[in-house]
Length: 70
Image (tube, rainbow, N blue to C red):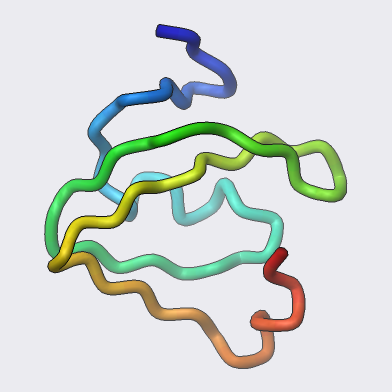
């Protein structure tokens, strides 16, 4: 598996472990573990994980941050 910036595709993670990795400062809260499906670059070239969410995973996004997503 390829490891970039401590993220590995296919790795099982707790979303709470990547709270500070997003330049958009999206806050995640996790009920179950999730898997990293892939990686992408943010506009300022920070590598971000693409996360496969489980049925019981919950995500909260602060309203003032929504415009900065994608």
